[in-house]
Length: 326
Ligand SMILES: Nc1ncnc2c1ncn2[C@@H]1O[C@H](COP(=O)(O)OP(=O)(O)OP(=O)(O)O)[C@@H](O)[C@H]1O
Ligand SMILES: [Mg+2]
Image (cartoon, rainbow, N blue to C red; front, top):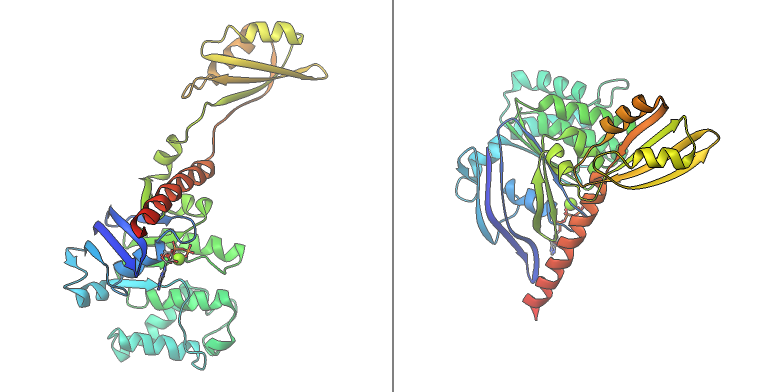
């Protein structure tokens, strides 16, 4: 649905997007993830024909965004980072105005406004449609921005940090709303909060310093988390020494530490990179007649992975950019 090849954007002497390429399948929800200044908003602005690129090629449903920008714009709903609104307009007037811009016929406009107002929590529990935009809180402005994007029911939605400024309950509702759009719509959204997009998105693109640092499904990225895993087991039955001696017989166990709490022995067993020896520990406990009250595996988190790769990427890009300026 969206095909990006070697996209580059210079702002004067600042290289914001450094030759990125990616592909978005129809009906998927793609999370564009990266730290501040990574180039997320710049990329999304180019995809939505809001900004020209310096180089590269982008097609949306086989339309070139540079040469067929009117076709592309008709297929897109774009919610920018901060939604520009006319403060003196009422919500309903604004949505009406936007519906007119999108060529929604007069006879259908009210029905479409009611539909999006309900979907974006503008009509319930309190009816906000008669409020002036300038009086709305940040979160409500965000909801108006989203309602606007959904008015003409476009096949592609581009949302730049859609949950920013929302309260926790609304973040959850927004997540559910975005998930409900999958399949019928192709969604690309940006965020710098990993935990948030991990649950919502089918694919993630991690970007740092204007370059792609990693891509994949949340599961695939989680599998790339490096570092040995550690098993934590709490057993009861023998003293520390005998417990460790027995644990040493487990295949794949590398290093064992033990501590005690009353009669309970807490074992920390490090294992090879990918080995999951929980089954072996359980079997051993059965053979020895130990009681077992905890058995879990600790691996590096996706959050750690994100911090690590964006840091490395930033470092490389920083060096490269200063070399380019020199
Ligand atoms: N209009 C502009 N003129 C000059 N430089 C810009 C402009 N807009 C963005 N930049 C620079 O381009 C780089 C990428 O910015 P961009 O806004 O795309 O980042 P972002 O990933 O959206 O960050 P954030 O998480 O803070 O929104 C940054 O170094 C930024 O300072
Ligand atoms: Mg941004």
